[in-house]
Image 1: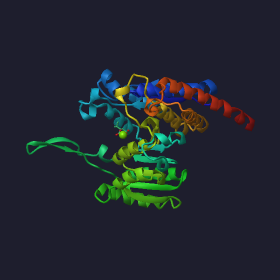
Image 2: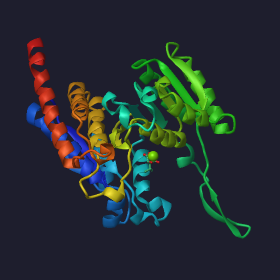
Image 3: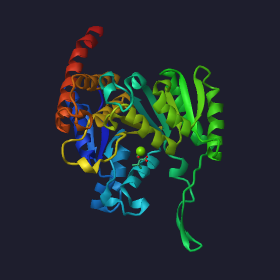
Image 4: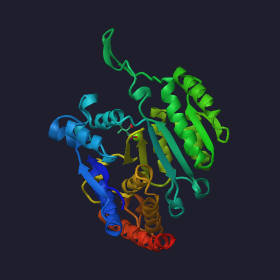
Length: 371
Ligand code: IPM
Ligand code: MG
């Protein structure tokens, strides 16, 4: 008998509630086959939390997350809250949550499905076979460094942010990248701007030192501008891309577009104790509430949660296979449909839930025979 897995669900803003709804639908479909296993508790974050409680990360949400083994998040942000002070914007809720839960490493895989190669803005021959993962440092760098702010000086305003990295922050994320590379193709590309920035020189130095502990993993350093270019020129050369908070934010959106739609890609933010799973995409306020969003990134994030937080690899595989199958059949939400007919968010969720159940049923007999 499996235990109960406690999941904090933070739908957030824009399309967040719609897409997390589909991820939960798929997890409930899993329970129909496997028996009860998940306990969901929903909390407010981002703009939705600001509207109700005036802050982007209310105390109640913090305690829900604290009691959960994993967090499933939709998206935060939207034009309605753009005028807020920076620490009271929806995005601050997510940044505070990352900090509080000490989620220092962010995994952002970008895999091009064979059946979607044609959707990419790049030539099929260039993107086919792309399978990389960005390992982004999530708690340091310019996102959190001090001093920061907008100050008055000599009769004009001056905006300041500071990039800061301490050695231990680089070490712990580097270890994660090399360990991940060992499960993949044994290649790490570390991305920095060491030709200009001291924080990057330290980054390169520390990553090189940690890399020596992983003699079986090939390490290469790239400047971020060159990396941005090579991601477009020859994305298949990358396996694990290790980089800082800011460069990882930018390069992960770029890598996402190789796959045809940013609506496909999940992410995992991991610490030592707990983890947060969320789509890479944002809250897409322009299509919110219209049942048009692609729920695949959210569903794939739930699959990552099963794999990394709960070690339910078999079920995670079933969900991933279900996604691949539905895509192969030509089912498309609006972001992927082009001139073809698009299905709704809920329809895509239904189809993936059904296929997941089929995949689980198909793998069940084998399991009992083994016993
Ligand atoms: C991301 C987002 C966030 C970030 C925002 C919403 C704070 O762009 O997760 O990539 O910049 O980290
Ligand atoms: Mg981003």
